[in-house]
Length: 271
Image (tube, rainbow, N blue to C red; front, side):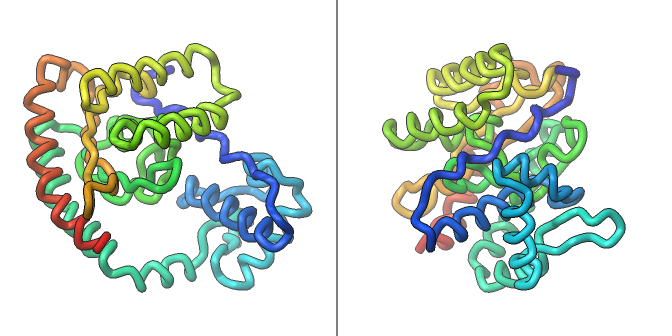
């Protein structure tokens, strides 16, 4: 993989069988989650249907309903589908999350200045992670870590920090689900991710040694909320020569200090 390139978009979760009443909700949620992976560029109908594992007619019917409800919008210039304004409007009814996101700004800026890379805040979202904060210069090409981007937990240091902090049974279930979603990836790519997870579990710190982006080192620790629940993670990604493994103790110390500050804010969200 070329230096600085993040791995390709992961496959979405399989659409499991549901009773008729909940299947439509499940499929609509699947489409909305997938739309969020390309919030800037959007999706063509055919590509979105293929990515979600649905036929085009079903996808079009669900999208039409979501457009009517303003949960999805279709851009006039290229007819791509994007998250709609109602998604943003609904989010305004969650001020505690907005306050947490605002509280992330200074810790992220401090990390980015100190290590000269890209500092990231991720939320734990089921089997995935969602980027809700970033600061500094990106070490990735494209939109790999744009705000709102969603990835399987195994696909980044930020996600692995969350994964290894979860109870063993939940951790193993998520690993199996995430790897199943990456069935189309090469064996080399899968083995690299397995190595990252194993190393991180041994060290108690998520460390991506260029497994998903060549020439990039990424470090992350979990951010816990009320009762010790894993709320998200704080990560820093840098060009490997600038932050080699020899600086890991310094990185860990800085991440821990900022995590302690953010955990007080996360506890307020989860009260």
